[in-house]
Length: 473
Picture 1 (tube, rainbow, N blue to C red):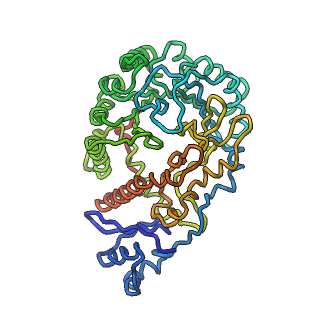
Picture 2 (cartoon, rainbow, N blue to C red):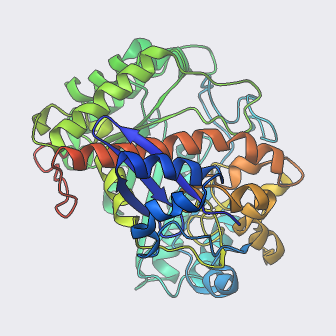
Picture 3 (tube, rainbow, N blue to C red):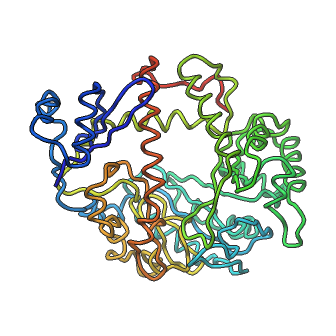
């Protein structure tokens, strides 16, 4: 197989990313032209003499990669038996909202729609027992309560937590709930605080944007009810209020600039932590497009983070929604030159299915996480009553085998971010679906590499991590 590299340029230099060693090389003009020919398999003997200093150091070598196989494959049974770190229960499929972009609103292939079904307490206890028996190798096991709107089943959640405290006292346990924020009362608040339950509330920005997408079944916006609850909590339980986090979905057509400003300037939640995501395109029935205004807002705020890292902008002016951006860049840099490719390897992307954050639906079916399609047979990896289906677990772990020929020659092999959801063909894992999602991964990886180079060209020292202590919330 040929040498697998990627050439690219920035305003300050010319570079080669060497997949074999996962290294970033700064090259001169002549070397750059040679490497472009190497990249497409057209280099001649004279070309190789020009880049001899790199080949002597082990770069620009023919790849060792011979087959697609995840390094954890042989250890998966052990991992599933002892290292589950988080289990999320779908306590209900019911919800009092009908958000326009909801995964359960009929917008996605192979996905269930809204229902009033809920998980029984007996099933919740089975989930607890299942995870406890398979987490002896971790210090803290996290249980997540998910919906629908999980607080519609608050009594079962309370009973489940009581069961854990009674039967598994002494075990390290934490809890998390993602809620739409419309259902709170004093009893719930006391329960959350007493059990140190992490609460994440979905809030999509100011009223006119939030109410555009997040509405009750009768069509009324939910913003006012959430604010009413938040103000009550802040007044009556400020210590708990300070621990609440917020997650926002920026939908196509939303004014991202306005959303961004809201989370920094709101007189209610400006001190709380917040993060954002976009609407998932995996298995969407219609194409999801974001306009130029969204792209410009993202690039502007990302640029501010980079300027702050270089000491050219005040950290205090950074938006909280972008506080993780620099960490993402630094983690990529930390991987460089540290993970040389092996003869058997797997593209980056898939988690350890069933180990990292398994999700259990109301009927006991197990999925690698809560973001996957519940009506897709390809996404199911087991059942609480029968355990994990190792054939499906290994297929999910080694999903890159679907596109083995393409992946073997792809320069972003180790940095690919395509997870199992990018291959959902409904009744089976799909090569065609996976290939459709490749382009965005290539673009994002190249953008990260260029960002690293631009920072180094302007004096950023990656040995010292960028601190956000003056802006952290």
